[in-house]
Amino acid sequence: MWAKKRLEMSMTQEQLAGALGISQSAVSQMLSCRMLISTEMVMKIAVVLGQSPTSIDPAYFKRFDMNRSEMIGFLALELMKLKPSERNKIMQETRRMNKRDNKRQSRIVT
Image (cartoon, rainbow, N blue to C red):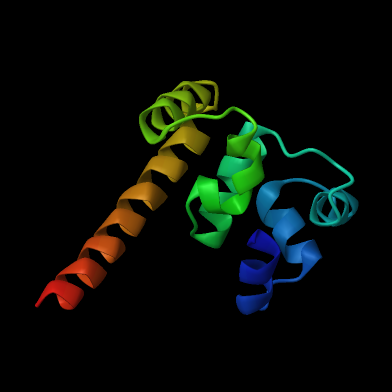
């Protein structure tokens, strides 16, 4: 799912790797499912691509068989493990995405 978004943004593996602070090889391994993606990395990818963490790797969350509220709690706990600067970046991006989604919803309703 996130591979498609990366391509839509015309982002190379090298560019994504630079934004994530990892090697291009690691990005390649994640894209080809040869490397498991940590929760922290799921959140970082979500921020870089402007997507919901659950859209980055839906299978990751399905492994835990969580309902929506449990997933939110899980993500909140994982957020607390991040450095404050990373956590703030994710929170800002989440707010931006919520505003965008709310605008879309209001256009649909009206």
